[in-house]
Image (tube, rainbow over all chains, first blue to last red):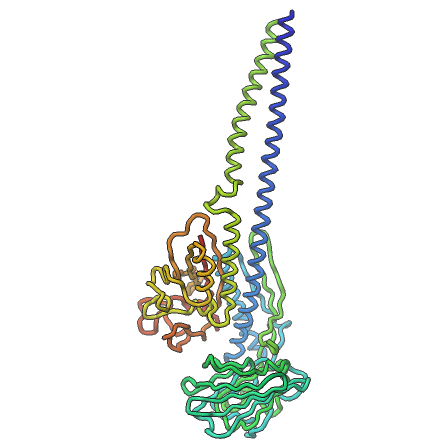
Length: 320
Length: 213
């Protein structure tokens, strides 16, 4: 009997041991599951954070691309109506978005769409002379205002000067001012067959002088930013230094010859003597509509997320 | 009397053997799980180092992209037609681009100071869109220094090219991008491997991809 009791006690001990081991295994199993879940969660969080950072960066690239594309469409042709320029911008912005989507699918496995909304976009006006002529006004006056005084903003002033056709003597003046009566005067005169002097005086800073070299007989001056597209050393104070330029006056327009383009945000900025480009010779200034602010909705879609934004992309930046 | 006790013991042995098997299996599973979780087992490089490399690669591209004079667009267009590879004396050949030499511009400076000077190696490749969607993408090596090692990180940045832009190499003509041919056999128009992928002012979108290890 004693031996039977001992045997029974031993078996109970064995069962208790097995129970303890099973419990331990259960704890290990739970630990494994929790560990896996935590690891997956951490990994997913890191991946999502990175993808969102990428999306933000891509969104900034998209805005920059929309701005550059719209700018180029705006300046491509001179005989455009308001609706035709909107159509061209929409078509090209859409193409750009599709191309960007192809690139992003390859690079980051993200799809991109860019939707242009013409009803939310804002139009501006371009005062342009697309063929070589003097910088005189439409009625042949050498002192005139391509942008009249008023509550508007100028975002683009580019002169494409034909140095060889410009007068050897005399100084051309382009005077810009804003509603706060701050002014900038840019004076341009030929100093040689291939050099042009650009001097600025302004109420908002010191005077600057730059000697700019022509390339192929031409000098391309971005008067808004104060730089030349054809000579990197040609740097001067641009009209944007004044900020919110609302009026531009040209003096001695007969001294220079070439082409030019000025963009303002409101058609009321253009003097009544300047006509539509469709009915004006290319050697004279005329006006044509442009897209001043492009409204786009950008959508970036990745694995399990969508990043959508609505942007009013400033094509021209009066203060930038 | 004996038989019930014998049955209990049999049950106990069975349970013991199952428990033993479960212990062994659990140990194996735990070991496998540890291999996945353990920081250094997925690559030769510590994840913290990889994260740091990744961040540096991303930052290098962003900084290079915003450089005032030699941004990424400048780099993508720094092409020598006659040698059919990137421009500059550092360029080796079309197969490896700049190879072991430091590429020019802000990107080259960033890559050299951030990675090469600290013992890391990198490749730089350009991926561009084909003329048609069905063409997929093409690829040009700008810097090829070998097959990426274990634990390599990849960072990329896209650059939009426009029809009216020109090549930036010192001896490049004033021809606009749309005037070049993407056909290597065309010697008349000048060769630039990135084609005009779309109608309108946009020329192509090029992905600058760097791989660091």
